[in-house]
Structure formats: C-alpha cells, structure tokens
Length: 72
Image 1 (tube, rainbow, N blue to C red):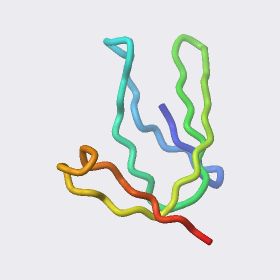
Image 2 (cartoon, rainbow, N blue to C red):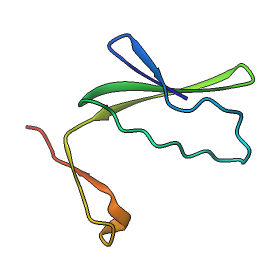
Image 3 (cartoon, one colour):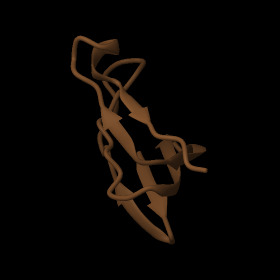
C-alpha cells in the first residue's frame, strides 16, 4: 500500500497479506490531498482522500477516533 502526495510516493505496507483484510496504520505528515494505492498480484486499486487538521479524541470516545476540523 502506498501514499502519494505532490508526486512523492511513500510505502505504507509492503507484505503479502495473511488475511482477507489488512489494516495498516497511516498518519499523513501534512494536510492535503493524497492518493492511496493497493497492489496485489498486478491488480491495483486507488482511492483519493483529503486530509485535514484534526483533534485526536480519547480512547473512551468513539474508540479514539480523530475529529477533523472543518475549513471555511
């Protein structure tokens, strides 16, 4: 799995999965638009995501989810 921003690609997870679902941890370095890509046996799936500035909630609130602040 890779992350691409402004032409720069970073590998997030590089191993053959041992289960049906893989959940790598990804923490982008800056807000912006990123393209996430997954490749397995020559099949590539991509998804574009917009990353904003957020606030990390404590574990007891929604399992520690991140609340993204809206930009106006």
